[in-house]
Image (cartoon, rainbow, N blue to C red; front, side, top):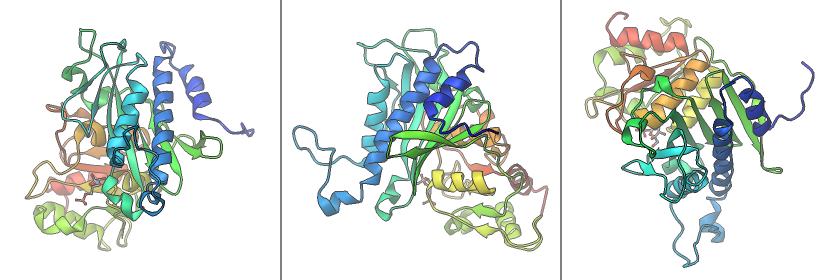
Length: 336
Ligand code: P6P
């Protein structure tokens, strides 16, 4: 393929829009707004370590109030980038109990943005990669302004989903239902450049990711599955590698590129696990399936779950297709 030169996310979105004849440009502009917010968050995350050393805040307001927590900052940046554009009817955030309405003075649009503004932020002091996760649904309620009904839609109805990983480089990965694309931020020009075209996850991996500190709280079938992965009996004929960062976006991103299975299952202490359905499991499940992988709660497809509340949790097993399906068979007691 002739070298197309650097493809910015803006150019990519416009080119992709040609595949969506009904696209009005609103959706493309919404993706662009997310990329813009991501650049702002990336700048702050990347200098977070300097706050204590150099006293650099950059986030003090006119009253010189204390530096915000990074996840509150990220939440605010996303809201301020989205509230006035007329593309959203409402938002929902991991940081806010209720749905976030569009201020009365602004017109509303036909999309809903559900997001975890900075997942894994407790890792920031250790300079571990963290991320923003987002899910876009269409408005389905009849009124002008969005309602909880617009937020509580199954993941199968998502229009788009993605994440930004703030790591050794900042990457934005998204799908709009026609493949998974990765863009790497070139901070010298402030552009996300296409770096991973049509990402596909290996059908079977060699990596498993879970917090084995919870092993004694898992049920016997799940423990049998993990023991199987650590044995020579598994399909690879040798033990899987254990890789667990404890930052969902980082663990998911590595498995997306290399193959593998990530598990945050239910346990004796939490019957629904720890992760959230609407703005963690659903968007990553959409990406996983678009890349040829799969995502389950152990019994059913994540994208088929009908949400009942904004912050509901779900067990999550996600990654390479054959690995996730095999985990389901162990959990059902159909494989030992
Ligand atoms: P544990 C980070 O706090 C997070 O929400 C996810 O990013 C990560 O996958 C999970 O929790 C880690 O949880 O219980 O293993 O520390």
